[in-house]
Image 1 (cartoon, rainbow, N blue to C red):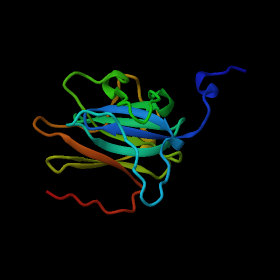
Image 2 (image 1 turned 180 degrees about the horizontal axis):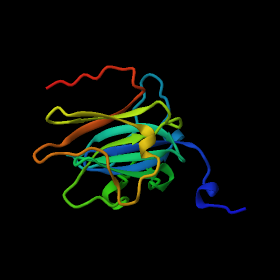
Image 3 (image 1 turned 60 degrees about the horizontal axis):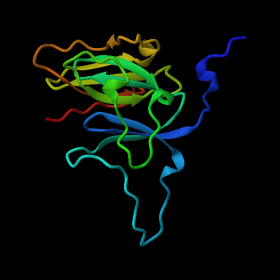
Length: 173
């Protein structure tokens, strides 16, 4: 039969880091280790003074990532497509990895669970609009993206989360 590129990539758990300025990278799970009392610690990254981590999570190299922009567009990328970095490099800007329309910024990145059935994406905007959509709706996202929520002029997406539909949503101003 045919062999596709994804079949050649080893499945392993990695650490994905995202910064406020949009830099993203993946690192091997054993990059960081537990320390005992009195340890000096390890430098986490060489970032500019005004940049910081906004998201750090574990994912499998074959996991889908959903990138959501402040205008409500969704883009997808596999974790193995992210540049592999060391502990100290800053990674690559996510805008260079996916085709984001000009004037939009990545607002949130979600690692999609393996089992999408019965799970939802919950979106919230600055003006208080909340939308829940089945995660199965985002199985096939074109390279040009998918409009997930319509954002009116003057509004912006605050974020999104994965939910199983049984939890409460609390928005605070």
